Structure formats: C-alpha cells, structure tokens
Image (cartoon, rainbow, N blue to C red; front, side, top):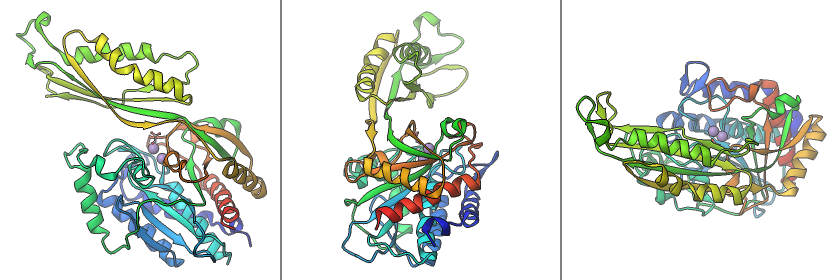
Length: 411
Ligand code: GLV
Ligand code: MN
Ligand code: MN
C-alpha cells in the first residue's frame, strides 16, 4: 500500500474536530492564542497521537514542537513538514492546524502502510505564526532560522499586558518534561501544507495548489501623540486630536498604496485609542499597518515611504513609526515544487501552480532548505474568519499529496 492510500480522511477530520473544541467560538470559529493554556492542551493531544506511532517528541527554546519519525539512516538530514497551531482571535478551524495534522496524518499513513524512508521525517508546530496575541507573526520560525533571536520579542505585550517573554517562560516550564533540542538545522527539504485562504482553487475547481512562492509583507506600528482635552469645552481649533490626525494619515496612506491592479494590499487592522472615552479628546492613537506585494522593489519603496507620508499628513500631532516585521517575497525551490506537482498527478488530483498571498513560516525556512508548500481550496476564499471551511474530502486530498511528496523527498 502507498502512503497516500493509507491516509485516513476520517481520522484526520476527527482529530481536527477534536482540536476545534479547544477555543471554539460562535460561528464555527476558533480562538486559540499562542502559548495559552488552550495551545498547550492542543499540543498535548497532538503529542499523544504522535506517540501512538512511536514518534519522538522534542521542543526548542522558541517552543517550536517537533514530532520525528525515524528513517533508516539516522545521519541523513530530515525532511521537515508542518505549520502552526495558534489562531487569529476570531479565526477559522483550519488555518495552520491543518498543516500540523496533515503532517501527522502523513507520517501515520507511512507507519500504517509499513513504509520505511531513508531520511527521518519531522513534523513541526511553529510557535506564534499568526501574531494575533503577540505581534509580529512567525516568531518561532524566525528564531529557528536564525533570522531574529527569540529574546528580541521578550517585551512585546498581548492585549492583557502579558509579555511574550513571560508567556514563553510559563509555556516552557509547562513543557519541561519534553526533551529539548537546539534551534535550527538544515533539513533536506521543507514542505508545508495549508489551506489556500483565497478564492483561486475553488473558482478553478482544482483540488491542489502547487505553491510557487510567497509575496512579501511588512508590518509597522504607528503611534500618534496629541493632548487629551475636554470634549465639551476645548475649542476644536486649539486641539491636538490624534484621532483626526490618524484619519488624515490613513487617507494619505490610501493614496500612497492605491493600485488599480489590486496587487498591493494595504491594511489597518488594529486601532487603539487612549484613553478611549466618549467625552475626552484622545491623548494618543496607535494603529497597525500591514502592507504586501509580490515585487520586493515595490514593497521596499512603498514601505519606506510610509513614515514620511504620515508625517506630511499630520496637522497638529506628532507620529512615531516603527517597522516590526519584514518578510521579503520568496520563490520556492524547483525540486520541491516539481515533487508536489508529480505527487498530485500520481494521486490523480488536479493541480494548479499559484503564489501565496498570505505569509507562512515556510518564508523563513527558504534560506536553510529547498522549500515548498501545497494548498487545498478554501470555500469562497474566506479565511481569518470563523466561516473558513475546507471539506474533509478536500483536506484528505491535500494530505495524500503531502504524504506522497514526503515519501519521495525522504527516499
Ligand atoms: C498569516 O496569517 C497572514 O496574515 O498572512
Ligand atoms: Mn496560517
Ligand atoms: Mn493566519
């Protein structure tokens, strides 16, 4: 029996639906913040399932979790697969967690089919891909890849004021029973399975996305400082109102980032107003900027113009702009892309090559190993939304292609 034939649609779906209960929110969504008790509970389930097939479990100092199925050559560089288990605060059931469960299902299928591979296969659950609780995202993969030390984010606070450093320490203490491994290594290859999170595959009625690369993303945090004042007595002409200046700034940024081809994506997703009362002119506003483009030169130019665009738009306040995430566009390795395409064909699944609009941990593995991704369709392209949906059949198709690809890469 082939690894693909041994993939169990029902086991995979049942596991995903078991995990959904940890952090379920109305509308079929999930809120499972990284390094939270719910995240730990979910990891314990995944660890127990991995141990059923004798996989070796370990974590690193960034709390990235690894599940290793041995190969026949213990000295051979492993093939790495996986994704993340944290969710957006109002997230869906499949973003990230699918790639971890698909990786686990793939090595379980190899086990069930009695297939040995020369190389070990490791399934990873990266810490904090979303950046929903602690910004930015991809902290675990960035630290693992040597891009940024994990300590660089120690003082980042979640909305409750808890620092990333404290949450990580608490988490590592709770997982102190798991063997520790060093950060980073050079895998033979990395292949991440994920839901598409966009409309392309469904619209084309295609089962598998063979991902060719990922567009670039930059995140900025903007603080605009004015002066609080009484809403009833302070004449409008004397105010330093940061909310009004924020509106001017965002209007100017909309002009800076206007793109008739809708390739450049500009988002202000988070706004915090202080002190946030109805009858006080605000003293300060903080907002986030997420800007994305597949062309590194355009992303660099537009991102570099953000601070001056904001400064020129302000009327009465002052602004501070800090960049805290910079993921330049990447192209995936031909050998991994071709392996996924060949595996899809061998499994009898239709496939289409496409780039990723979302960022992924795979972006940071690129400098260390030949890297690729595969996508399964997202209903109506909806993601970062409780209504995110991919059917059990579609998820199983992706996992069959993943299992076949891993078996090829590890042979
Ligand atoms: C990942 O969650 C992204 O925002 O692209
Ligand atoms: Mn994701
Ligand atoms: Mn996401």
